[in-house]
Length: 374
Image (cartoon, rainbow, N blue to C red; front, side, top):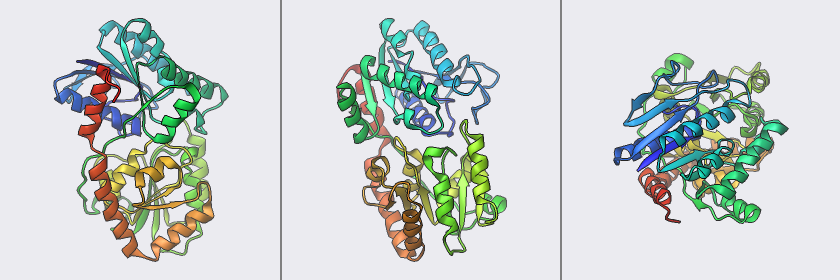
């Protein structure tokens, strides 16, 4: 089968959940003998990768093709998905798989060209606080296009599946993300760079965007009487002003560490050695960072939104969405009982290894490509 994937920033990047999912699907499908092409965005908002020279390349058996991108806030995803769709139509794959709502707008062009289309809704992106009215309207257009025109529609939570049924009368297929089993690493690089040791810090890892609420975590943490540190790991996404606000909110508390975007060995070490992982989001799809923290056997603390609570399935700690007091109380209790954290971390690891398997994700996705409803 010839497969095209559109909507991510760059193949192989770990900048966000979409990039991780596209990379895992593409390389695993290529390993099964399928011809997979990923159309990469170019531009300054892409944090990682080696395709800035604009050349096509093969990685992991996957054909990676950079596409023209208008490198301006609000236009990068719009332009890259349009130009990627035009290139994919010329390539005539058997299926084009769109990822995220905004990039689905040009899906209609592929549909008119007679190419089978599948869309994965990674979250209701128009709800994200970083987007203005115009961008939110465009993203909502992508959502409607996916709901009304895609041959196959994938969602990452039961809540979003119900949303599409109620809003558009469209039946979507719930296919979760997957995660690999993880081995822990000692605190080596992170000890040298940030003086971090085993169990000496709480970890937030994700984009520095308002809907993930890292400012809520900073507020709650500053009210704690603890010698542990708070590590804020991640880069901004068209939100540099918000990142400045976060740093200002943390000013004067030397327990709070900003690492910037991390990948590779430092990332694995941060997961491996944190006392607990904290995700205070108001809006999520299916957070890859949460799955990875659980796969590392970390105790996880999240807001009580279904997209996080359903993944934890009782194998972690939740607090009232948007409440700094509730988060502070949850962290305080966890810091006072390290045995509870170890038990929950072990349970989380066992749960994700049993439930979130990439081989199953790939198999079900390929069935949908072929036209099977399940």
